[in-house]
Length: 376
Image (cartoon, rainbow, N blue to C red):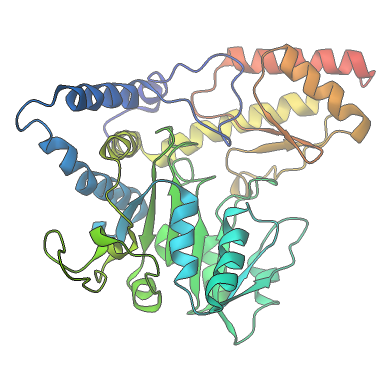
């Protein structure tokens, strides 16, 4: 680590009141400069100047490998989390156990794979109040289950799963992880998973069109690359006049050439994260999450997400009384506080760069809410 956490957060300049990183993360100086540099290069077209564009695939795979513990040949660039999950789940044979309450990317992949190929059967897991734990997963497994799919952090409850505990209870079944709501801010043991998919537009702050799929050797052995394009073949160079078999590594899970500008943005963001250290980012984020919870407690708003640091990442979920939800949402809107309101809850998601001015705006919004609703 060569970058202090203070230097890291100083590179971001989101407007005060932004508390919606679980939806999208505003990019910082490093990613913005990288995007500008490559846009300028692309616009010029000088002889030989495009060579750096073709170096971005190897660069971004190395950056992902650094933060996940996978080898770079086990990583393929993807335009988003959902496409990576589609590749993985369509490649399965057998029963995949997952919660129907997961973010739609996983349930849709399982059902579409079942409908299209008939090789995958979803096993819908019951949760413990929206949370998947090693205990409730173990109770619902049988010999027909070939894979278990979970989110690293649940997008509704904010619950951080116990990946190591889940690995212990599922044995040698494949473990598929949708990591987008924690990747970049959770120092997770990704090496215990067989499939990790994530995008860079949220906590990594690399913008849309950025993501990856990481596959263990066991996953590469057991999965079938169902939609594997011409860039994913075992051929050396462009395959012409033939259709060779897919590559033996994670390149098999590509459809075409990726966007090198998106790769550059993601690589720059991940290199910066590695310099600062995910653990340091997580520690600063934990402070901000605790401060948000303290403000909610000050106004007696029920916190439905985990309070224990070991069970949470960056999401705080408030569940006001149903008749108070509209008043709360209006107060936050009127004070310029960006959050997600969905399903009777208010999801607040700060980042390490969230400053005191944002927390002041949040407190002011909740004071207005309390005054308007008579809750205080």
